[in-house]
Length: 350
Image 1: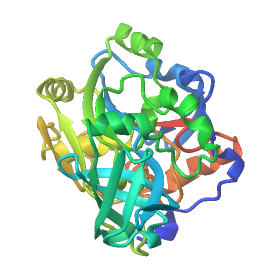
Image 2: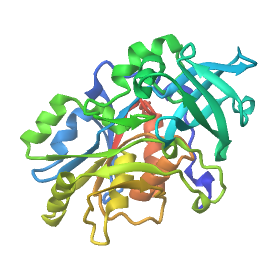
Image 3: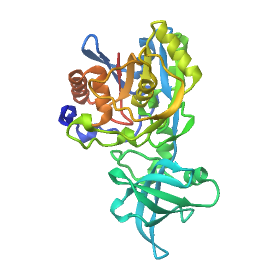
Image 4: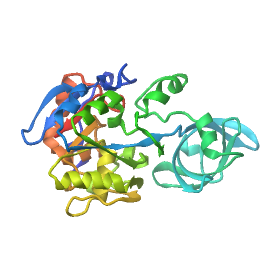
């Protein structure tokens, strides 16, 4: 399949720049695969669409302030401004793979510092797709330093002054159920949930299962090939515990629905599913790329936000709902002025 098959027109004004006043105030487009139809709704209706015994699977990863602003160090003096997004640990706390700006200025051996010198580093390797590997030097606890000097790693399509980022985004670019530190982007389908929504689900006998899938580079990695089958994505780590696996498997065997909240949850569940659709309790990395033609063994429904054109996330949604139906629903969402991307509205596919 060609990447051009996953394109659509989106006016800039529909890209949500900040969250709504209430997390659960978002609109929701309900897409019915069997009926090949959609209808406009609101996320407040979400709990009413599920029955006792169904399982909502959420991703409890927690975003950490992985965006560091600092300077190059040349001959012991501060030079040009640099930005580094901590992508993943390579070895211990000291060695990290990062996305760096401007990348051209950071060749092997380049020195950098962040937080008035609290973190100093040297580029030790060039990694594919413009990433760099940096070995850091510091005194104290690495995570604590990053929490104090780092910024919420907002996607580039959210264009606000940096001074606004911490005030607005530290609480809102995080799900209410975030627990396990490790994500560099929020699992955005989960941003709509509130305690009230969970109370309504539990009152209906719907079960909640928590897994962890740390959102990493693969989630926003651009597709740079013309034939999407040639695309390869970076590894992201996930963990599914014994309790979550048992809850999901009991529901599947009873004929109840498994509802994935987000594409990262979907990738973790489909990575851990056996041929019979049952989930293994495990902790490992996954490089699973889901695109049209992929078989789904674990999930029966999917809640997801609206994704970028030509992205691997849109390809996953197209694989689950069908390409024509998905793009038709997206065109409807554009016409009805839904809010798009991370802080935007959502779509429930049943």
